[in-house]
Image 1: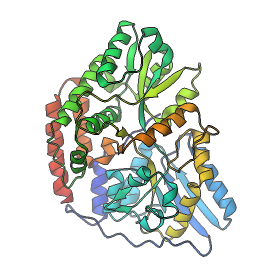
Image 2: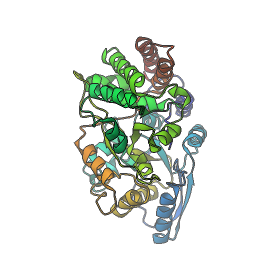
Image 3: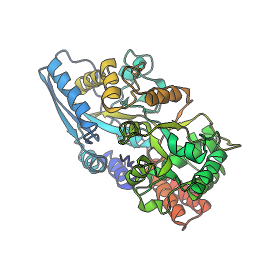
Image 4: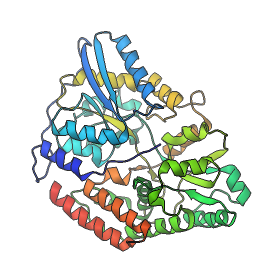
Length: 438
């Protein structure tokens, strides 16, 4: 499964231009969408997701069919495209101000760009904390789509990043799940000595490395500093913890990772793990189904990327974030769009998303032993322990910063850049982003 993240600077340019901000700053005034419940549920709703994968698409088709059956005067035109095609599609639709009524978004600055461009409806009045609908969600999931104290998105899943491991492979090598980052490096040495690839790692699209950096930044940099630096208006990236995080990742790849990872896809690395040729693999919970359905079956479990000794950041933060949906601020059917999203996030449909496609839902009490396998319910328990989500670095930061991190870390893996040089590039990108947003 691929999880390419948005990092294209071109999207920012398009959104800023669409907002009429030119090269300046600030948030474009959004149209005031009428979110009130429609007196009569009738009309056409348009919706675009990035869930075209045959494993996921049928769930959304089923929900749409059920909504239309319950509301025969409503026609939901659902379009589902893949990750990469979605990038192109949303760029074109944003530029032409022809967004659908409901559209997909990752959390973080990716979603915030739509807010700043005036393209996302303010949903605070219907989904904010304290509202009947909002109270059905895990608070951390709602907060992931908060900007300027307002709520702009409905989370559709809960996604955390964990190191899965093959119990059989680790047992044969005499390795137990490590308690610290340093223990993890030692475990890799043992696995290598046993002739096993310690961690299956493919970084062909850059995001796989960025997920490690996201977690290591959260561990190594004080939370308040991270918050300031991930804000494009205040980002400076001068804390020494950033270089330390990159050095730790460099050490991890050297002792645990796959050689020439930049030329290897995540899927290829995953196949290596599934074949028992690697002991561990760093993945998202939305990928857990792959391991449960593996043939031949594998005995597997998971742990968080362990905390390094002396880490100055938040030891309980967990890399991850919900995906979500935004409502077009200019939609003439915004009230109907909200009604559909409430249906999509009903407890029944939330339970079905776990049962049908193995995703954890942000809707409270939606995963139980009756609709989820043990690793999913264990992950949900662990996610509940996290003080906060460390949102993917390439979506929580401004695209300039994300791009600098992606290219810089790829260069570090290939040996052409040092951690210090990577951060020089990130700081230059942060300065450029600050000028853009003001």
